[in-house]
Length: 145
Image (cartoon, rainbow, N blue to C red):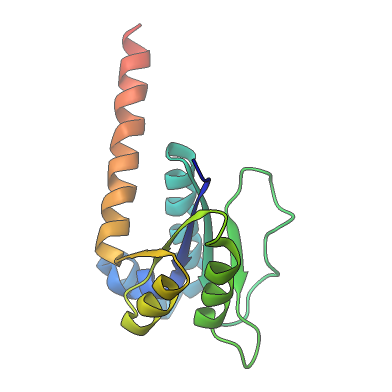
């Protein structure tokens, strides 16, 4: 069985989820951090290794961060998040089960041509909510013992 990688188009998710989109104009960096926290929870509760890609400047990629942390990438000047996502999908699809979360239709077609699977922002949010519910259920079960 191949290891599983989830690559997330960060801004695509933020702008599709009302609870994040509403605050983005005034609190962009903290909204991105909220998304990263949500994705970290998903990674912790699933068998996905998660990477999130944002358009624009930010800190350098988090490849050297904590071992269990998700990877966060920001596009450079003149580069798009889509280009990074496509490069990651092309690189890892032969050896990993790659899933890309984006609502960009062209991006979905492109990554699927590399052998990746694509999911929508709605599906990703469902995956996050299910993972959170599973963690809560496990905690309740452990507290009963």
